[in-house]
Length: 193
Image (cartoon, rainbow, N blue to C red; front, side, top):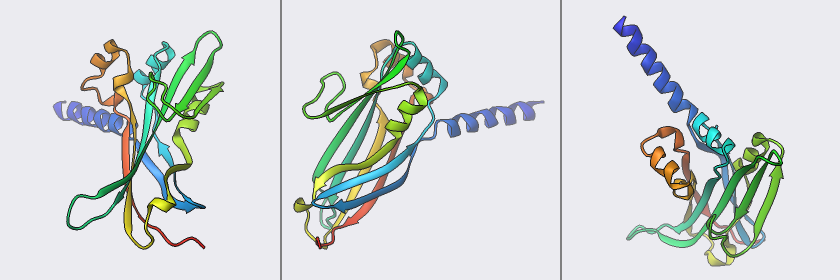
């Protein structure tokens, strides 16, 4: 009987880990005209507790980060560029619509620069907009030297520090709130044609 209980417990633990798996797929960095752009698909499913918080009106903040580094054998890699994109997802109960705000600055600060505001009928539509990154400019090609080895570190995470304080305390040590992923890709710039 104990063996069966232990096996079931292990099965549930593996299932919960697999459910919360976040990964970055189809990641590529390329030169488009005079820009270095990144594209990818982020694969994740919202855990039940996170979705329930959204339905109760708690907004979620997702952060995309990209660092462009020049590889150096004699010291730490040199940072050439660093960019962030903040996405705020919230449910509007009066209109029964999902609101997505995307900015270059932090969620509550508003950040300088451009902002994109979209409204969606379903949570799935809103999440698909967050999961898809298409030709996001991370640097200018003029900042890079041809033939030199660079690498791009790309990260995605749910920003728990932007949650209301009771949720921040409640999420400590809970793996279902951990939606993080990262990938590193090499980049060698070829001269423009």
